Image 1 (cartoon, one colour):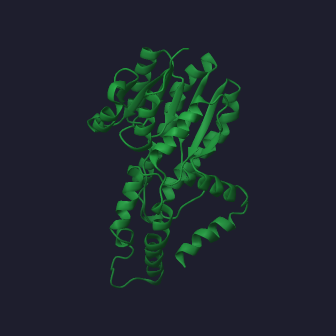
Image 2: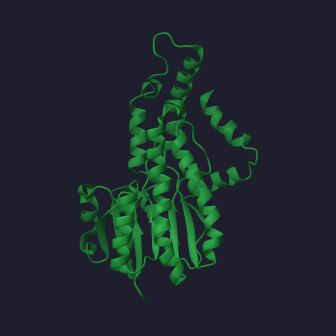
Image 3: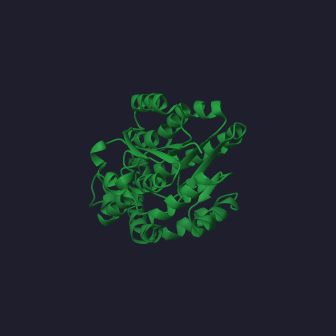
Length: 297
């Protein structure tokens, strides 16, 4: 059986690292694990053990940079001929009041979470289409179905991924190419740690700049400060308190890759499937909005 070649983005930690290590230990799989900063490759090199430079190879790739994507894909296609599976995993989060998030911050999130995944797919898709075989996986989030206040831009980027997946999946099936969106909830990754770290700073982290004079808050700003405190004290501990072990997510990704007909969307736990069902039977969005609003009362 021919070796199946897999490219994974964002492998310095979290889901990317765990998935790369797991797949590299599977017979018949060759993993190209990428990260934007090779100085952070220590963890994956240690975890890879004997797989390193045998079935797992580490390459530099910054999905937020067009030249990095073009150079990487050109070189990897020259070396490998074609890629069988692309796992778009690289991602970043942005926590903050919507009106305080700068356009630069928004663009950074979308450049990594959405456009980076789009460009990687565009570059590797022609080879898959030519050989009438392939699998493109987007590590999305349940936030791509269920929005979360104060994670507005992150949520929007994941909604964009979900729209893309739903749009391209039926066309690519005509070429025997599968498309899958992986929809985890809270997972113990660097994104989780960053959000949790911001929470430990207290509500003042998001309350900053609510008013030019923090001692004399306007009524609307005072209300916003209250909502932010509710986010920190009620919603965030509830939503981010119990997280799924990263190895469970990587095991599901592996199973998905090895399936003959992978799903278009895959929630990574029964709880996330339950959330997805709730969203999909809430056509006017009131139930979901009411449920989230309750955190702020």
